[in-house]
Figure 1: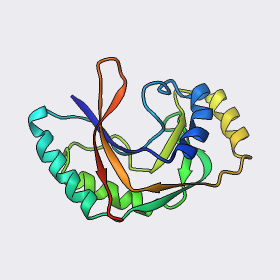
Figure 2: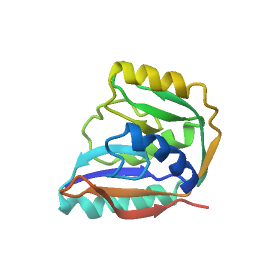
Figure 3: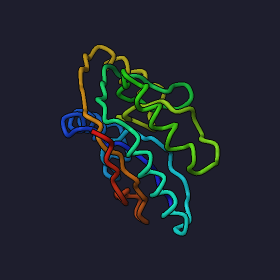
Figure 4: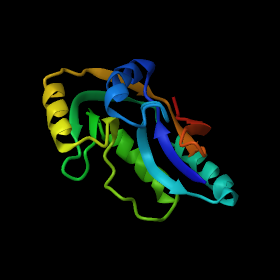
Length: 169
């Protein structure tokens, strides 16, 4: 089965993200806005207890923090994704490092950059136009991060929460 590990931001941040995702993200209906901590990976169900145990240890050793989203950026030319950039990347980077330390040893496709995707699979012209427009918009969004989620993909492509892990207060 395919799994991933994500943070869902506050409902206010999700509202802002979804106002763009409705138009620019074909995955809009498959999953709420998220910050991915571990890209999707295949895992045999027999390995799930080991993964859950590891994620519980990670959560219990990680302090809750606040995420700040401050601008729009893109991964162009690597791929045509636009996203809300995270201003304070360090807590996400530390959480990511703890998670992947003992989980799924395969190399990740891309370097870890904490972000909230608001558009993907755009043409080059669309990407230039949208990022040009959104670069003039001032974003000042915050979200308390006090949990992360192990999610799995259903047969219809929709992602569902398998388990939630609470961070230390």
